[in-house]
Structures are given as structure tokens and as C-alpha cells.
Length: 408
Ligand SMILES: *Cc1c(COP(=O)(O)O)cnc(C)c1O
Image 1 (cartoon, helix red, strand yellow):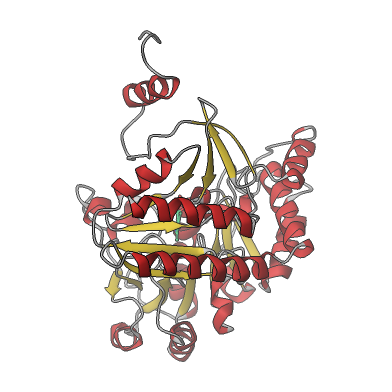
Image 2 (cartoon, rainbow, N blue to C red; image 1 turned 45 degrees about the horizontal axis):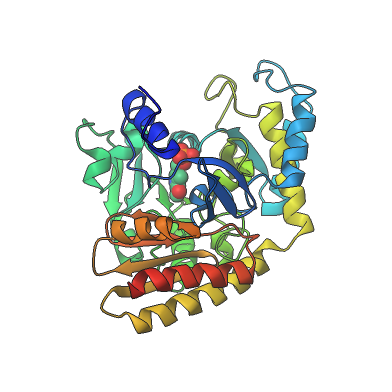
């Protein structure tokens, strides 16, 4: 293909289209570099990142302290596999556990793997500790959930785009409405081993459950001897204004899943946090991952934990979130014909539109001289979740861009 007569961006978009599977429908911006809340495309145009790689970039792109930890570790050792031990894993796990008040961490790499790991733990716990008959374990999940892309996980998705064509579904899952404790009570049987939920359904469009839901869920799980499993992969690490979103209701589920921001936006890290009386069902050979707990990822995780101790990202998220949501609501008041609702907690926010969102997200990208990058979630919502290191001034200009786009 010749580079003549097309822009640099078009050149890369064409190459992507020809050589990579089309499992995404990206906003057509081709990013070359990033720093903090900003990214630049191949033509040199600047954009405010209002997606943060789905909350992976909570601390901003290439945070100097995290990059330093990464570089330092690459000069030492990156991967040994779990056949041997390394001097990073235990230290990082200790810091993460102390920060989140859990007893033990099982490190994996991606969010999906953390979810799969928790499902395995829950089933084995059910057979060994609750005497559920062999192969009868049931796990309850919620409508509109997003927990990842493996064949088991998409099998309990209620989004046809995610599950269609991938049957047969893995048995043993029951789907109930989100935010409804009565449905949870009704769905529980003697073979129920766990309830898997997101404290806020981010992918579904930042759906916030009724106040008290998380607390009630935890109570019901305790009373019925079933494990509560919080998927905090997107809500965790201060995104919603608390280290973990369940802490808004002072709830500590039996299992919490982390990914995305725990890798500091520079290396994939994920894992399962729990107590020993649950985690001890995992024994040598029953689970594993070649890269899980690798020296590099664990060095980054340790630096992420240090950063969370040094700086109050929760308070930042609360203050900036309030400011941002207020600004979005003002834009909504001006354009009630276009914006149906503004939702959010901390800096995890979304606007729901009457029309399809894609026209607006592309207009935000196209805004000159500085663009704004956000992505529609499903067809009618736009999630707005800038890095937590963004300033009020930067958010103010973001609101300016959003307002201009709706004015047009
Ligand atoms: C992103 C996400 C996952 C999956 O994580 P991957 O790293 O993409 O595998 C699972 N659950 C939630 C809530 C997520 O946001």
C-alpha cells in the first residue's frame, strides 16, 4: 500500500483494518504517545483521554514513579515462572493486602483471568467446605454484567453481542436483575456457592445500584453461607472515590477482584483478594499462570501500592467527580432534548443520550485544536472517566468541548 495521498492516520487505520481481527469498533484516532491525562495522535494533535483505558490509567499515562519501577525491574529480572520464586511477588502481595485489608492475594494477568480464578475458587470452596454435591454448584450473576470474554464468562452475559455464536453455555450460572435484593434471596438454593457482582456496572453504562444494596447483598451472602465476589476490576483503585467501591457502604466481600489500574497502566496485572479460609482450597497444581506473579508486574504493583499510600486519590476522585458531574448536569439542563441522564460516582461518570452516542464521541474527537477521547458504551451512553490526576482546569476545558459538541 502506498502512503501517498492519504493522511498518516488513514495509513495506520488501513493497516489495522487489513491485518487485525475486527473485534472492536474503535474511535478512529491513532495514538502515538501519551503523558498524564493527555495523548497525541500520529499527526501531533492533542486529546484529553476521558476513557483512561477503561480505568487502567487511573494514575495517568506513564506515571514517572511507575515507569521508574518498571525500568528498574527490567534491569534485574522480568519472568521466572512460578516454578521458581522471585523477590517481588510476596512484597507486592503484602502491600496490596495491607492496603485492601485482605489476607491473601492470588496474582494473574488480565481481568478475565481474575474472574475465572474466582469462579474456580468458589466452586471448589462449595464442594470442599459447604458439601455441595459433585458438579451441582450454582453461581448467581447479574443482568447487564460485564466480567470478561472467556467462553464461560460470555455464557452468563445478557448481551447478545457478547454471547451469540459461542454456545453451548457453561452450566451452573443463574442470572438475576441487578440492584434487586429480593431476586437474590429467591435465587439462592442449597447448592449456591457464590454471588458475583460489580459494585457499579461500568460497561453497562455506569449503572449505580440503590443505596444500601451492597450492604444488603453482603448480609444475605453471609446468612446463606455463600461467597460474595465483587468485581472491582473497573471500579477499584479510587476510580469511584474510594479505594474499592464496596467501601462506600463499608462492605468487605469474601472475594474482591482487581485488574486494570493495579498494573498502573503500564503492565497487565490482576488477581484475587480473599481470606485464607477461602483461598486455601487452591493447592499446588489446581490453578496457575505462566506470567501470573511475574517480577515485572509485581514490581509495578508494589509501586502502585506505594503511590496509593503517598497520595489521596480517593479524595481527588470525589472532588473532581463532583465538579465534573455538576458541569455535565449543567450541559444536560441546556440540552434536555439530547441528554437524558447524567450518572456518576467519583470520576466514573456517564451521560445517557436520546440519540445514538457515536456521532457525539466522534465530534468530541474531531474538536479543534484539542480533542477529547471518550467511547460510547452500548449505543446510547458515553462513559467519561479521565485519569484521576487530571486537574480541575483540564476538566473545565473538557466540559467546554462537550458543551460545544452538544451546542452544534
Ligand atoms: C475490563 C473488565 C473485565 C475484564 O478485564 P480484561 O483485563 O479485559 O480481561 C472484567 N470485569 C470488569 C468489570 C471489567 O471492567
